[in-house]
Image 1 (cartoon, rainbow over the protein chains, first blue to last red):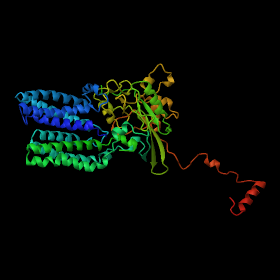
Image 2 (cartoon, one colour; image 1 turned 180 degrees about the vertical axis):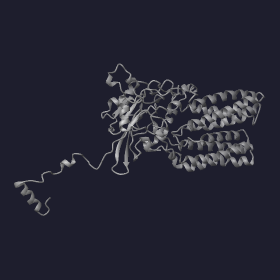
Image 3 (cartoon, each protein chain N blue to C red; image 1 turned 135 degrees about the vertical axis):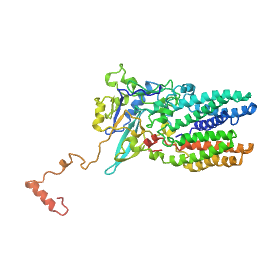
Length: 289
Length: 252
């Protein structure tokens, strides 16, 4: 799949933003006044900035509001609704906190909304039978651990961040180990794609067009895959390897900054791999993956 | 509304004969022509006469080399467009309701005025049947020429999809696959028509007919008749035949 920068930025930053908002909703921490303003500004920059970035990949962004109508069947629609409702409720929570009072039941509702938003985002990818690598419990597990773990890091919740990021590293490894062979195990082959595979070996002989097209640009992304292993190591070290020892020792302002910066860069790298290494079955028609 | 309607009795679709398709791409051109001049946003091209041409098409023809366990390989031309699936995953993922399946005849369409161009329907389609138009920013797909098949301004013979109307080898058939008595359903039953990627659970309406095996032991049923038949010549011709055969190196 084409790793569109707007979608990578959206899933990374909105994940962190909603992760932070989740902890603020639980009252961990429960700041007031200017400190609260600072925390909520960071959470909203991530969450709203990510949502805005996601509209950049739309063909007709001016109609984006229509995407809120089909919540009965569409995970994308559900995500939009969950995000907007959570951000509106979170706004009331933020105003309360800035002016001195933490509203407990509302906070829990906001935290629930954050979980719903991250979960629906993950399901957009998990639901796709056409991308076998994504259709697995590790996809939502990874989105949850990275979002809540990164959020805990931003919220200065050392123990929670330590546990969640360690869990995230394990889930990421499981996702890679199982995901690397899931396409081959999915049963979809050039033979089943063409229906000619029962008795014969099928090989793509002539493509239908001499140049690239939308399908090849969007779904058959091979650039940079040769660096996948190196990038996996870099992503793991930055997202988990650097923050985990810092968290184990204990956060100070300086080390927390290093841990956050490293984690964000690492998640961006892991998210790039999430798209770049995902193979869509349509590539089989072109003899590519 | 992106909820799928209950399965319709009428299931309009195509039957594509991989045995007779010659890979001429006439269906591709006819499709591009009709669907650029009629329903919806035109199918745009970028840099069409330059070094890096690219464009939107609703129908494309692949060619595959099929190698059986024994015998010679065979080339199969393979036209591919929307299969108008009964369980169309492209419809249910749509966040705006632009993507829909018609309750009356099962045709899957895009309401281009409501499409935000998010591409998720194309992600959900295993067949690569949907392409985002780079100029219009909306999703394009085969309409089964919905503006031809019911068009009373066209002569009856033209009320079929443009690809079917133009196919010079009769490899494309249009009809109601929901009716077991229809010509297309009978053709599918007779020839062993199959679904593409049945494991994806999409239940395609369009069917494909398999290529017949080629290169059997006997190359041509007329071949035995071409062997020399005059083995019982008489008179002067027979004497010349025998004399020439008796010479060193003579044919027997």
